[in-house]
Image 1 (cartoon, rainbow, N blue to C red):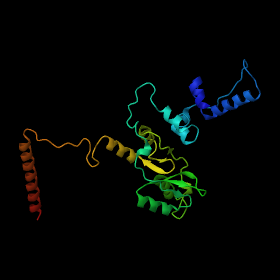
Image 2 (image 1 turned 135 degrees about the vertical axis):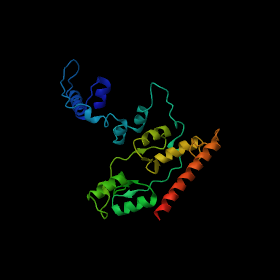
Image 3 (image 1 turned 120 degrees about the horizontal axis):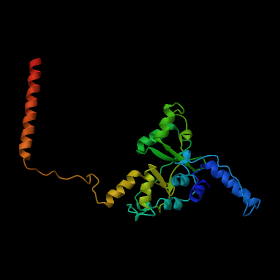
Length: 252
């Protein structure tokens, strides 16, 4: 409702105002107040503290308020041509590794060992019933451990962040790349992991760039006077070496 107040009425309101307006609308419907009546609703907050929350479609999707399609469509340019790379490639077309899940009963020590052995620093986590409950990152685990809020023998439950970006395999790579500016990885169809480097590798392959050779790398070309410049540099190097040797000799 707060988003509707902004879009339809131009009112920069927060979530509490949206709740108040929603309750007012429901009251009006329930009591059949009808048209040509005036109702007063107090809007108790403004948008200041919610810029990164309900105004953000990613925040809304990650918390189940809107669908993935609504989130994707809201980020497609409407007034200018969309020149983003990857509109013709879907994330399910990538060779993605299967996700390795931790369980809520995993200890901090076990999580650290798994991060070290797998070279991943973030893992999706399932609860005791097998439902996906969130993500454990090395940053969040470290924050708990060094503050002595958790010990290595404790389970990871208190370090798990409940918000985990989940996407479908039909999402195009331009949208995945946009998501990766907000999340370092995402869970695809609850089965695979996609990371920033998977997208970077796809871009590299599409642009036919050899993995170990930067696109900007060029073979140096000889310039006029190059030989004399090299001789001058060599002379300066030898002179410096001679001075250093003489200084060392005088100390003996």
